[in-house]
Amino acid sequence: MKTVNPITTLRPDATTSDQYRREGHWRSGTVLDDLARWRAETPNAPALLVSETGRGTLELTYAQYAEYVDRFAGALHALGVRSGQVVAIQLPNVWQVGPLVLACTRLGAVAAPIMCAFRPRELERMLRRLDAVVCVTVDRWDNFDHAAALAEMAPRLPALRHRVVLGERTTDGELDFREYFEQTEHTSLPDPSVVDPDRVSLVLFTSGTSGEPKAVLHTLNTSYAWYAPVAAADGIGQDSRVYSPNAATHVVGLNLGIFMPLHRGACAVVTDRWEPEAVIGFLAQAEVSWMVIVPVFLSVLIDAMERTSQRLPTVRIIRAGGTTVPQPLFRRVTEIFGIPLDVGWGMTEGATTFTRTGEHPELAGRTVGRGAPGHEIDLRADHPISDERPGRLFVRSPSLCLATWGRDDGRLTVLTEHDDGWYDTGDLAAPDGHGGIRLHGRAEDRIGVIMIPVSDVESVLLDHPDVRDVALVGYPDGHGGELACAVVVPGEGTPTLDGLRDWLDGLGMSAWCQPSRLELMSQLPRNETGKVRKNLLRQRLLAGSGQSGRPA
Image 1 (cartoon, rainbow, N blue to C red):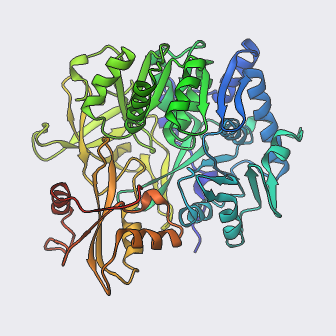
Image 2 (image 1 turned 180 degrees about the horizontal axis):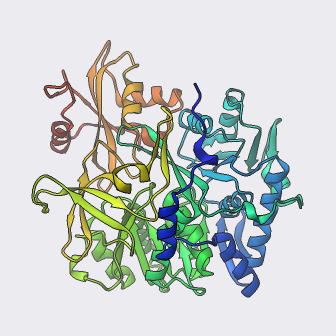
Image 3 (image 1 turned 135 degrees about the vertical axis):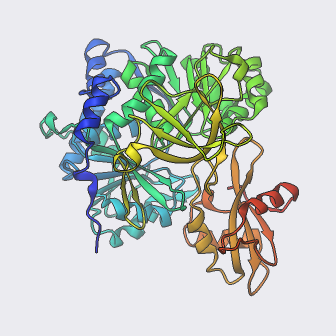
């Protein structure tokens, strides 16, 4: 029996809504009201500065940005998109992502941003779970034909009515994004009353503790509570130039790279590709003042700055997060930029902590900061909590999503219906001594920044004839993050890393889900209940070299 789509009916309970509004964490307006304000007050101020590969530099004013939101909303409305329906958006870091997400909001529809790293196996499951009626994708990106993959799966997706392609070519059955959305005028729009900050407006995907990706159901208000405190703490204003190389379809890129600058009347700076030496010159020209970036990208950026002797003198705040920040990076940021490195922690499900510039510099590298007012933290354990014996991290926050929804099993978990609204993050932490927390890894079996779906990859590998038993385990990538190692008990033959990855490629599995290292064992260590003792496997990985292969 098909699970009823909860997107059209799910709302926060009245008690929660009243409390968060009364405390100022939620609001009656939306990011569309922010856009309307700046369109009226500063129509000629830059809202976007974009570096497009092969197209040069593009600037959009607030008046132009708002016009594109209306134009894109009209195009979606002409395609039959109505309130509560889902529009999937699988695009790279192009300027169209922001106006397109806001266009969905204008219709009361639900935007489902999906990273281009997801390949057909994962994408088809996501579109089926959401009953997406429109999917906007790119023609080709990173040597993968996204449009062709979508066309191949479309006959198996009865809810999908339209395929829209952004790029240089389209085929039969596809709409050209630039022609239909950017160049064609569509004037019919519903009454603005369809915009509701408390209904589900955004769906993002992550993996759960079991490894199955979850649809995370956010409202405009839960998203607002994610980015507004950061904007206030960092003094984001109309003279700010905000940059994030994070995927615009991921929670950080969406909230801090798109919504936050719109909220404060700032200018978002966008680069469609991450090519550090080329990016530096553009960022300098754009006079970027604020940046959020994952540690590995930041390290590579600093390397490029040192090679080229280029500098970014206008940068005033840099935030790193998403994974452990290597200690040397704090020193390098201070040396190159002359400012401290701020960090943060957060989840796709919501809830964040972050350091404040200038506060407790002695804790650099030893804290992920504290939450904003109203963002609660609870560390739980049956023993005294310390760095040596951390507790399990629970959060309760106005930025938490309304619910998670299993991509495959359809299990709906409404957060306020469990444990009085407390959410188990799966992380271990200890107090930092100044109201914040210090992270100590994950209590559950999770790998990587984007959370590799461990059980899914393991189950697929078990179908390979050369794999009799397998466990996927994380190991350090040398940049503060994690990659996946397949620890395999051989089957009919002796597997190789390249052979396993080629096989997973053939099944359409995303590259970042796949192992980048292989270890062979005669049997996996298991406890008395039959569970693999992955702690022992991790120790083995740290002690040995293993087989390396193509990067994940």
